[in-house]
Amino acid sequence: MSATESPAHPRFAAALSELGLADLVGDIRRFPDQTRTAQEAAAAIGCELSQICKSLIFAADGVPVLVLMDGASRVDLELVRRELGAEKVTRAKADIVRETTGYSIGGVPPFGHVTKTRVLADRSLLGHDVVWAAAGTPYAVFPMAPKDLVDHANGTLVDVRELDA
Image 1 (cartoon, helix red, strand yellow):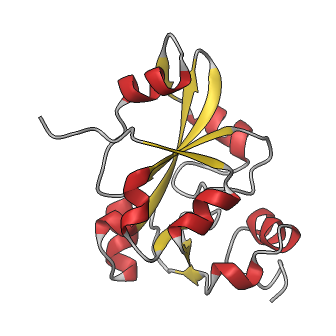
Image 2 (cartoon, rainbow, N blue to C red):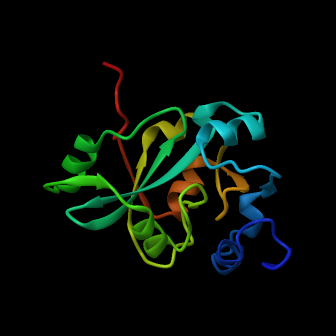
């Protein structure tokens, strides 16, 4: 399938091709309704919430960083701050997300971005055989083995999941 025929965002489909991942990714699914949230994506796919891989952009001392997190969990900003040795970590604003990745919030894939960004991947993703991530739009997702996804995102495995109090 060519980048123009793919249900993924054209930039992401081209990135898959350039990275030689088109066969590894599996079937990209496109839905008639948006799957901007992990809950919407899990419901549309029919999988567990924790099988969704959220691609979240934060600013660590003003520098964008991508955190890959399972859909059932929240990112602990203090753990991210410590992991990066940063003074301050905040959620990035929508314009920074688009500028950094080339995609809008709700459709950010784990790789295939317009800029090279440091990537932290929470170990919780490895608890499944397959996880689902955005394919560049809020309407499309793709399945991938979590280890492959982390490897292709050049992610560092970390523990940055917010623990229940």
